[in-house]
Length: 485
Ligand code: SF4
Image 1 (cartoon, protein in one colour):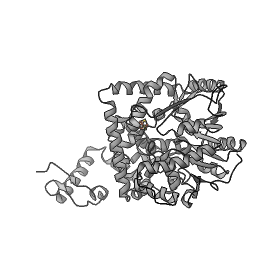
Image 2 (cartoon, protein in one colour; image 1 turned 90 degrees about the vertical axis):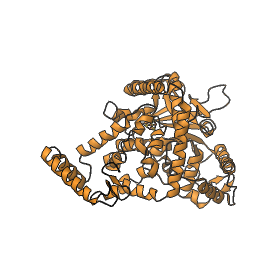
Image 3 (cartoon, helix red, strand yellow; image 1 turned 180 degrees about the vertical axis):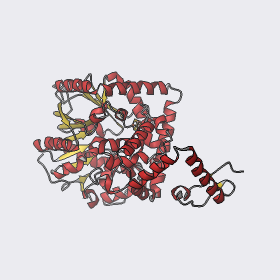
Image 4 (spheres, rainbow, N blue to C red; image 1 turned 120 degrees about the vertical axis):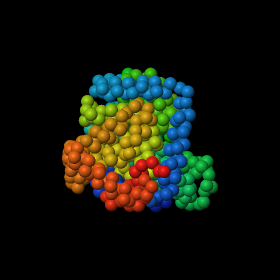
């Protein structure tokens, strides 16, 4: 197929798509986080009460399913095994990468290295241009969100169709994913019904099966007319040169096997030494991600179609994405690379559950977003996110690979202080506070004044009015000074 103008011929089930589809999708990362603050974004999201309900319902359900999934099993032993596998893989990443590349090339896979986001975009766009790709189908890939791949491809005349149902909705709405596993966690069925009815040009039944059927019809058409399929990858397997993927919708398999060319964009840290490591990591990824024993599809892709095979792509390319990862090796924040993107830390985070993923401003939300964003994007863009946490430790407790998110967040706060990245007023206030409380006399004097002042404002040991200097806290909560009588 020759290259086509992006979206000119975009259609679902043979019908042209409405203007909403043709609007350029909002590309996270392209805006620059520094243009808005976490507080501004959080406030905007808190003003969407349906979103808060949707997130609470979905995350409660997933966490409950997770606990049921592992009830009565040696869950902690499995987590410890997973931690050791991930720690070993990351500590020896250069050697395993070399091994993976050797094995993958021996299988006929073309391997590319992308040092940063721009290079990843250039490589994928180049592969498409050389092959006259007019349309790509994509299965879910957070790495492609990181590099803003869709807009880059659209910019060079490639029509991009997201095929994961949630991503399909997000793309059609001109929205962006808000959770690593469940992209439309923040959306309601009513919104999807309205969207699909507009796309169909008729009122569709407000029923999940009918709505999914509508999307399926259009997506089948996209699969059959696509020149290339782009996927992510959950794991790279060093001993075999394969890419492992988990999906629940079958779109991953169609993306990787139906079009002539398959391109996988995968972060270098997704490495596992052996295929048997999947026996430990997969149950944890799926159990912590969705509460399932295993996802509907587990695909292990190992190169293009071989002689005598009935299906598969003619060419397979893997783009290994660095974009800030190798800089973490051997450093204080190396453990952030152990993440397997299950989303469990988001589900239990009291901050994420209120403000949702978009408040974090980039691709990843919740505790892992607060860690990865400043590490991958820099302090100026994401440094403030280390404060978007209560430090309750719920994320540490639920992480399947035991990443000490709480410690990493504290480390990022320390780095922010060391780099003087916090606002001047905040820095001066904390410096004065630190100085005062280093001296017993000053400590006693200041706490004595605070105690006396609050005692005047309190009734029955509780301050229920706004306290100057503490208004952010006392505007919505009582300040309890002692036990209520
Ligand atoms: S940090 Fe842990 S809990 Fe959070 S997404 Fe990564 S693996 Fe899952």
